Image 1 (cartoon, rainbow, N blue to C red):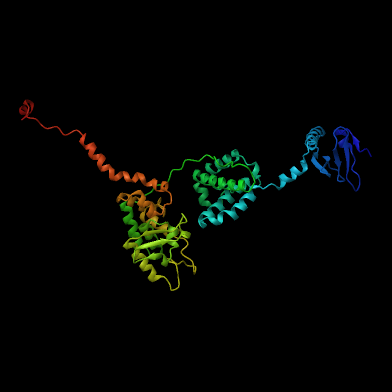
Image 2 (cartoon, rainbow, N blue to C red):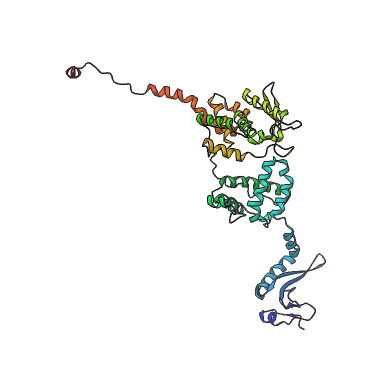
Length: 419
C-alpha cells in the first residue's frame, strides 16, 4: 500500500479504507501533510509534526469540504508556524478552553451581584439571562468587539425588551405590541462595561469594548399630582377597606419614601418622641443609613400601626406570610387608579409629588435631597425647574412695568361734539 505520493483529488477519492484500522497517505511535497483514510470510509487532511520532543497531529479538515489544494496551502502555513517554534495544535486547544461569555456571566453573578441590593441584583440577573445570554452565551470573551456591543444594544433598544422570546406568550403583551426600550439598553451597557472591567482584572482580555458605548437619550418621567388629585386620592384612601395598604400609600405620600422602604419598615426604626425615621443601610437604595424627620400625621399612622401589629412581629406592615412584610400592593393601587382616575400615575410618582410640594413650599434643593435620601446632587437637580414658580411673580412684576397703560378719554372737541 502506497503511503507517500503527491496528493490530489483522484488519489484521495480512490484510496480504499483498510479493514479494522485507519491509515495515512503522506504528501511528497509538504512535509508532514497527509490524508487519513478512516476504516469507516471518511477521510480528512492532517499535519504531523514534532514540538518540544512530542509527536503531534493536527487535523486540518474533512474531505470533500476541504479540497486537496486548499488543504495543502493550509499545511504550508502551519509548517511555517511550526518551523518558527509555535505549536498550532496547542493554540487551537487553548482557544477551545478560552472563557466564553456565559462563563463571564456566571462569575459576575457570583462575585458582584451579592454586593448589590436584592432588587438591583435580581434585575441584573434577569437582564443577563434574557437579553445578553441568548445572543452572547457561546461567544468568546476575548473576541467580543465594540461592534458586537453596539449591535446588541441596538437590538435591545429597538423594540424587543425580551430577545429571548421572539413570540410573547402573554396575550396582553401581544395586544400591547413592542415598544422601544432605550433606557433598558443603557442599563445593559452599564452592566456590560462593569463585566468587561472584571474580565480585564481576571486576565480574560486586555480592553473593555463596552467602555464607550453610545448612550440613548433618556427623558425622565415627570408626573406630579395636582391639588385636586391629591384630595381625591386622600378621600379614596379614607374609604378603602384595606387599611394596611392604604397606610402604606399614605406614608409614601407623607414622607416621600420609596414603597419598598415603607413595606419593609420596622417598628424599631421610628422614634415617635423625636418624630424621626431611621432607615438602615440594608433597605435604602444608596446603601447608607438615612435619618429623616416625619410629620405629626405620619407619626399618627405609625402609632396606630404599632397598636395593630401582632405581638412578636417586627414589621410595621406584616404580610400574610408569617415573619415576612407585605410583598405587593399592586392590585390595591390599580383599584385606586380607577377610582381617582389617575391611570398614568405610579406609586413612585408620589415621591415626585412630595418633592414638588417641598420645592413649592420654599425648600432648597439641598434640603430636599436630604429628605429624599439622594446621595448624588444630580439626582436632585431634576427638580430644579420647579423652583422657577416662586421667581415667576418677580418676573411678572417686571413685565407689568412695560405693559401699555389704558388710554384716558380726553375732553377734546370731537368728544364734546359727540356729547
